[in-house]
Image 1: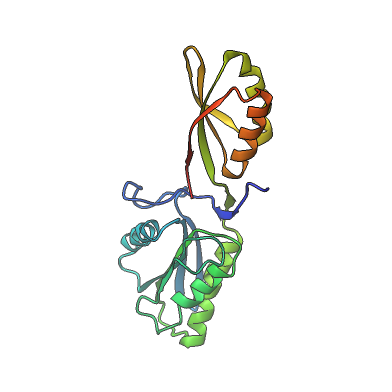
Image 2 (image 1 turned 135 degrees about the vertical axis):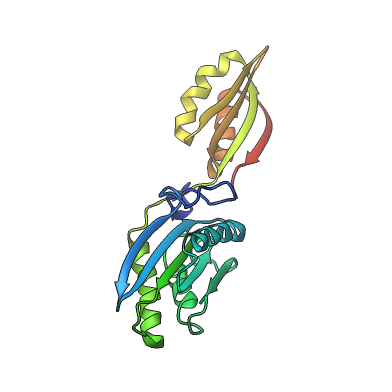
Length: 224
């Protein structure tokens, strides 16, 4: 079973403690001029409506004098429409937010939020021109958006005997597991982090290797 769920932006998730204005590790940005209007596209990583709102608010605060700050977000897996949102922010209905959202939903990247900031340059684009401009701004930016693999991790806490240390260290690399904490008493208590899909196989393999002489204390899913 693959550990990789899907691609996500290689950016930190914005929250109330994020810097202002957002630094490059929180925000990926492109700029374009279309018929004298400036379009600034700001991409972020959001895994909830709340984190998307934090990002949108930060961008709107950064560009308070913009003619429009239109946005869209899809904060689940690619093509998941359960947690989405969009706004034309004063542009004619359906010319900004919806075209932007369509690009997000038809991409192979999940957990995305985008704001397109427009400074009007004096030339009207018409409804078709606006759709093309906003859709194109997002499409062009998402093509070069830095991404990483989405992997859900878990932590297992277990105890074993000192005679099992070498067995544990031998098996861990096969499951992309690493030791987070260890406590030495009459037995050893390990906290081990590994990809969620590997939990059952790792426990089964290590238990068999020790003839069942390990005890699983708890399992915690770190990100769902």
